[in-house]
Length: 322
Length: 248
Image (cartoon, rainbow over all chains, first blue to last red; front, side, top):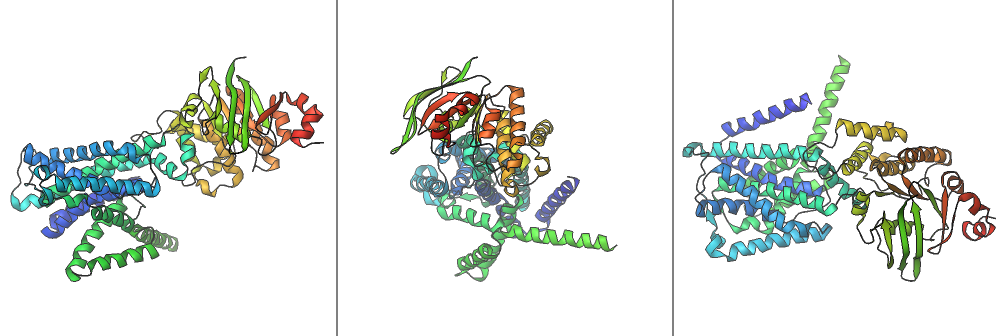
């Protein structure tokens, strides 16, 4: 436990330090990766119940547009309010689509999430007067409880703000995974019938999980929108959702940190492959996926576990030798 | 004695197979009832009908005078009618202890709690106590997938007991358990049930087990209850023995 606390503190120090030391463009990538990591984390949480969400873009766009609307129509520029509104928008949409989603499994669940996100995409594109159509909405630099950071520092502040938001979510998810509901989700994947025979409603459990994933996705969308400064319908497009699933497989499901780590690796990978292979970068990602599926089906997290095991093996043999 | 469970004209067919036909049974509070009969006689169907897994084509099921026909398993479970399974229905991805804790959490009405931890000291203590009764303490932290068949069977029953049922339906509680351990298992289960006054129905193929632990026996054949009485009288009846139990 103490070791975990120490590890947590080191991790926090590392990420805060990175934010202060990294050059602007890579700090921006890190900010985006963390925000998008919340969507990936949502994919992983649903995977625990054996469900694949191919419509995370729905919550992502809901959260992002909530910030856009709040700024344009209500004049709300506060980052905290924006984050809350984003999470609330994700939660609200999840509350609407959740009852139907909770009734389906397997490929039907995946297709239904995809359908909902594409309906939302359609609305965002067509309702030009409200949503700005394919042009999207511009998002002005946010303020923080009345403080408007100077332009040179805005990136750092947004990074730290995102870090705190993601950190809070990670804490919440740790609690959730240790709670009865977290275990019930894994029990649903194993044996739905017995879950009902314990007197629990499988569909209600799934509904609650969708609400959690929706709120978390909305927050991710809001955080990302504030950093990017712009929202457009592509946030809800199916390739965006597909990317979240891709990153979930890339990072693995071994830990809450795996999707976040996967998201960071992906963001940099994409940037560099795009830079050096502008016409074939998607092929590069495809090859990486092939390697992952073939050699590390547990994602990049298996590499970490492998190294961690080796290192504990080393220290153990070292102790024995001494 | 008060009637807790009653079926009236319960009928269910699968195509041409009649799995239950006009089953009229009254179970009184605290009774220990053995359900016997050849394979395909409708014993498991009877359990599936009572617990809401199957809907009857005709007939009604009353629990303490309330009509529970057509209610889903989770509602019936919450009302106090709990079952265990012939083929253990567990969560292989979780440990033995976690399986138990989930059952206890469900009983405490916090199966969908997402804030407090699953492992709470008093609930862990309760789970370990039940596991100890079934000699599963040593396996508590092992994944269920690693448990031998006999152990999984016991865990299945232990999870049902963790729900603190008023009526417990057990589908062949000793199948898959070695002959040597059969009576030990039944002794443990029956002791727990006796202490808490749980009404018990159990499907069983081992007539020695039935003879020793059932106060009353229902003999099923082709979806019908063809005999109903105490085991001493029933097993003495040559017709029942030959036609239904296959004994000479």
